[in-house]
Structures are given as C-alpha cells and as structure tokens.
Length: 143
Image (cartoon, rainbow, N blue to C red; front, side):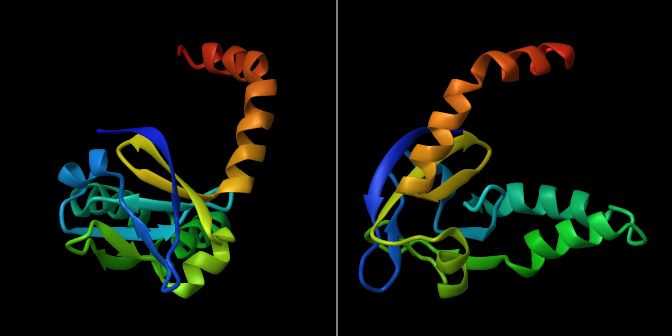
C-alpha cells in the first residue's frame, strides 16, 4: 500500500523522484494519468488493469461515463522508474496538473497522487476546515 505525503522537486526535464518508501511496491513500470481535482494518479500495472476493466464496463450511451473514461484512459501513459527512482512526467500531464518546480507526492493506499504543492496546500486547508461535514456525510455511508 502507498501511504504518506512527500515534497519533491521536478528536475528541468520534468522528472519526479518516486519516494523510496513507494519504489518497491511500484516496481519499474507504472501508469500515470489525469486524476481528479487537478492532480495526477499513478497506478501499478495491476491496479491500473483493475480500474481499466471497471471503466470500460461503464455504459457507453451515458455522456458522463464517456467523459470520465476519456479523462482517465486517453490521458494515461506507461512510464518507467529509472535507476535513480525517477519518473518522467509527460508535458501534457504536467500542464494539466500545473506542476512546476515543487510537487507533493501522496500515497492513497492503491495509488499515488502527484500535486502542484500550492494546489495541494489549498486543497488540504479546505478539506481540513470542512472535516466535520465530510465526516457526517461519510457516516451516512456507514464509514
């Protein structure tokens, strides 16, 4: 599982270091794609296959389903973790997430998220200020 929050820097070529803690689980290949909330999602090949099967099973006739499948699948790219533990993030994904020099790499159990550090800070502050409301809604779901 991936857990934890790490601050890293993109190098001039757009490479990001994978936290040492994540490298063993991630392996040498991963899938990176557009995520939600203007971040990037990084999956192991196995987790990606599980998600992709669910996505392609969504109803083709529903516009929202088609849009979500396009967001996730068309934006996906196979990436390799190099010997220094870095991943080259494609230009179009760096642009989508607004990645500049400083980034945050967050582990969310079965995936990794990559954020612009300022976007992450704002997202966390907003979420933390609404934590009571979020907790109430989750309790309605039995969590």
